[in-house]
Image (tube, rainbow, N blue to C red; front, top):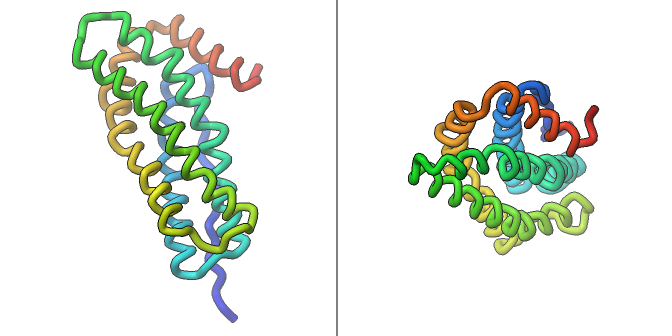
Length: 182
């Protein structure tokens, strides 16, 4: 009897909307775990082939990048980037914010390409990724490393320093409202 190897879904501790930057940090952790799940899925397919576990992993990656990632990017576009652009004090930081905004557009475009392959896998329409699909997945994944690093190391600390507790509370309330949380 063969040993079954599973590709579990995503489970992570949540941060509350009363601490919006902790929530943004937790989202970055989930992005990294989702990208890791995608890498493990690709290795699993090469080593073991497609089965229900692989299809479920594809569904988990789809769910994260279809639902949570766009909301996270919207959080940044609405609450993190504007105060940094409004300060006019740090040209390098403003240029970095503009680059991150361009990254969000590119991520959405590349997700569209990568998504199709994962959707086909999740629905059982394919058993393996083609070289073109693998390339689309690679292009999507490569969007993230520098983007996350810049946000974690530069953008979030700078925005935290600009936003007082009332502004952060308002930010968290708006983030919750957009997600339908009371």
